[in-house]
Image (cartoon, one colour):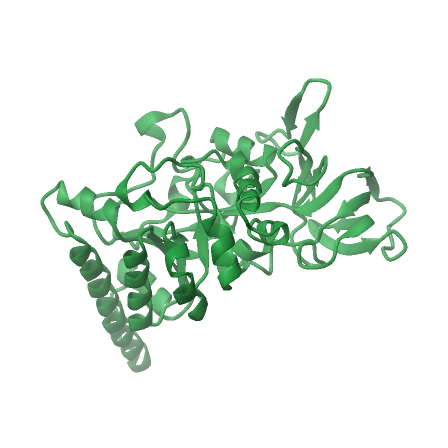
Length: 403
């Protein structure tokens, strides 16, 4: 059945806002966006009155551990890091996803409808990421892109993890060497594999090298955990050496070399912004960084790194970044079109545009005003969350059975 959200202040993000606008949803996709006069609403469509409210695309958090680092579960629910092999390219976050992690409920209350779940940063190469919707019963329901990127880490984390085991890598030199050796092997592997195929000969598939060869071929992005400016430069140097598509994750000191990132058009998923300076790499963390990067011409997305910062605080981080100099329009883009585009998901999510998934959130007002809240959340056109004013709490659609 078609749904039409009518009468709201519609913010498509990739276009001009429409006062008294209409968003038409059909078959799980956005069918039309415009004024009431522009959109032909089917007679049998369900009408949702958004008068006095703001209507936006669902937010996207491009770096979380939702479902693999479950809250309140302790060690039994933490599958973030397989810290037994420095090169874990064959590990896949999808194999550890629990859609009943309470964090998924929090995501809905914060207007977050899509996430990219990543392995942790304990290994130089942590594994493959996965793009999920934040409502569903199983991984079969929530996954909408199971091949997005490969997570890698530079800096303190991997050198600490393996240094404590008295094995390589225990220094930044060793971490970079692990990554460089892995890509050299993957490049050789791809050449041998392609030659064997051309000759019609059998070839033993190596899951680790197969994954890295996809990074080299541009089929997967390289999500580089890196905080310090010198580590960011190492990430750039490695990417230029092997020619893969680099996305800087965290980028805590990225604002110190914003011109370097802008010149090379390297995007930054920045955050979490509410964390303490718990380690040396975070000593220059500042809420001014998103604004500095944006003004330099760097494409940014904002992340919670959930559960480091609760995922429903994503929009609050953006609001405080605006307080410290980020333009409001840029803040909304950092929650929607930017994270979608920088990981190749812009044909599905990130804006209110015909053809995209009908992930739509009705807000009580400007979401960058912390006093406003998500009133209705739709994922693929289905109503999955509604704020109940009488009970002063959100009501989430039942996950355990289908209608």
